[in-house]
Image (cartoon, rainbow over the protein chains, first blue to last red):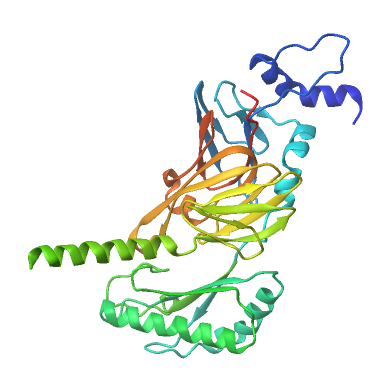
Length: 209
Length: 149
């Protein structure tokens, strides 16, 4: 980057460094980069931007704009993070970010462990996506709709999850860790009153991590 | 008789809670260089697939990095010379039990928040020596320079 643009971009954090009490270097020596403890907000992988709040020993700051940063002691208002510093401080941590988890929903005919035809067709794709990962931990969570008693639904949604886990293993996927759980009717995708047949709630959620 | 029953229940409760503590809360997914995972008195060299537990301390060496994925889809990755402890981890959405408290003593971290931050934002925090970070469903990076203010 050329000199002036680089200076402008760097200015907010140099300011923070100076105000945070870093000793000024002797004029003849090259300018050292002040060391800082700080947090910077990034867009989520889906593109949305959330909020980070830091409660420090010297104040509280709220970050709401992507690429804004604040010192961890809360002493300075948020300012855009300097690009060169950001790269130096975080390139390795960002490069080490694991592949994000993937989610799939499988649906069932009422009352049993028979997958719908569409969900049967989805299974090979799930296995294919998982097989591309270096390590695979899989969670298979069964859910039911609200027709019937809690314990019956717990049992049914467990059998649904077990059915899916067996099919996936039968397709030759090597899994490092597998968790099979049942949430019965306690974790509805579509909230309904008790006793409501709802196909979207008769589901097994498969997560590849 | 009553005492004995009480003792049995206490024993059972202890066994159950030990069991709960022993379930992995996440796994190592990426690694360059060297890193260790210490849980209680058990210290292991991190490898792909090494499990993490509540209380685990994650430590990366010089020129090393580490990436982990938790049960609730929280994804953390660390640069060199980093020390992070998972102080508290609870993930039982159907019982409304949610908590992810961690401490970054030094180093650098990239954090992608997961289901816990989505369902109960105030249950997620990252402590550092000078301040505590709260998270409302997002990605952020944090650097702790233990020689800096």
